Length: 303
Image (cartoon, rainbow, N blue to C red; front, side, top):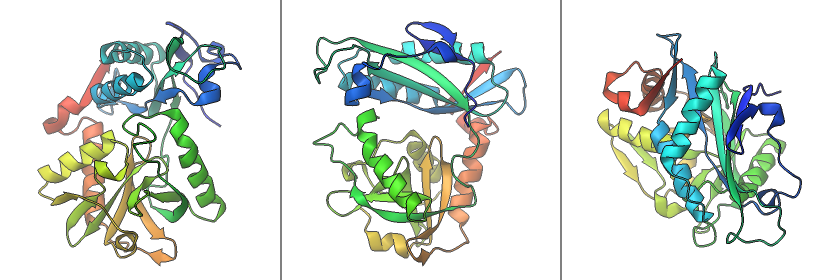
């Protein structure tokens, strides 16, 4: 069961979540012509009258860019303004997740993006740990990550997530928690909805943008944080065999935050994860506004 926040933003106004409904004929429902975002928020542990959002500006920029693939001009400033008002109206008291979505709201049946109505909504739900903070097991999916030449992978296009859904279900139904997808070149790409990092010989490695990955905001934060901590960082292609002999492997994303990987297929990974834990501890401190060096990553909303 999900505990949804009471108020949603729908059709240019704030309404009760239960009244934010679309038609069964909605174009995006049939053709995946939508793009979404996702960001976390939490009540400030040090100030009960303040809500903290992690990297609000970057999330709004990415959704605005994703909307361009749908031929929808939605400024990041508009998205940010709506999200801030959304939080003020809901006044959440526990950690939560915000889901903004842009979509083709027309009721037509032709698959197209021109001469068709678009819209934008926002809703939210209470959210703690998406994956176990103690670590997860992964399998290599039989499904491959799409290529950027066939889908605009730099946007969070909803239709692209059929592959993630197939991979996730395949993993869970075969006894694992998560899936790791390879790209069409047989290199490691990402998990079902998360970027992936490995540690080898003291270096933090992650697939680069040329490996058909999503430009993750948590991923970007980890790369910056690692460099600031003096951890060597390399973005390059990663082979399947490197996963199996890595010193550490972890997944990253807005929902997953930083989640260690305990086992891949039949290969147990080391339980000692110093770099993973260091990065996770620092990222937690940043999201809770306890690290003044990264205050520009935290947007504080006064209630």
